[in-house]
Length: 316
Image (cartoon, rainbow, N blue to C red; front, side, top):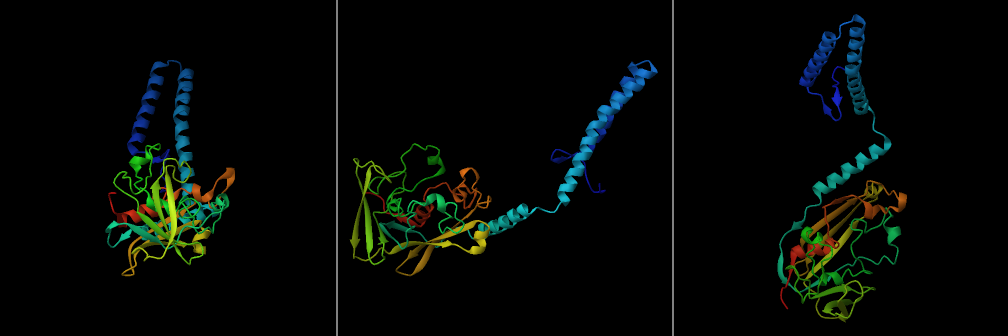
């Protein structure tokens, strides 16, 4: 054991004064045994018993110190090297590229143009959630063309930690019904499937409709030729092969003023699966990933960020 090694108790270093106290208790115990026992043989046996009882903890502390020193000097395993390398990259991305950039906010916005819509998963969710190259991995639970990506921009997006505590609370209504101060857009334009036309989606209350994605709400879709909304939303997924080797995915959301061609808001999201795609026990890597930056609890992070840049028009 090196001269610099320190005996440890559990995870902490032993205070020198504890050694003094330990020695004092040992001396007191030994003295009492020798004082109260009269015969030489019993004294000898008592002294041996005291020494053994006090020596065992010392041996345990010594073994702990040896183990701690070996662990500190042991070369990291390949799995640990991989973990540390990925963690370093993820931490750097989180520190340097995860802060929202909002150049300005806009009040009383009625409509928005979605330049891109998260593509349909076509029922392949489980395979995508385990695919290291999946483009949408940074936001694996965000809605897509199948589940109402465009429609949810028409709905209340105020999904905060306080509201999350009450899972049974209705969290969505159309723009004609105010909920918690944030209203959805009155209409949302998005490209058609072939990209040749624009489709305008609006929402109306429909108590008889109990189907998903929004019970009590129906959506009206129609092709439009009128000018597109001034403000647009787009995204770009990061599918860098080097990052994906570490099971790190990213996406960047942009809010654009089409009149000035200016990006007025931008937010990047990062996700890392430190299980590196492990699927044991039915695990779904991207949805099970524990590391995301920035941390969020919203189901639709894109909608939530957009609502901080484009303030929707309030009132009926």
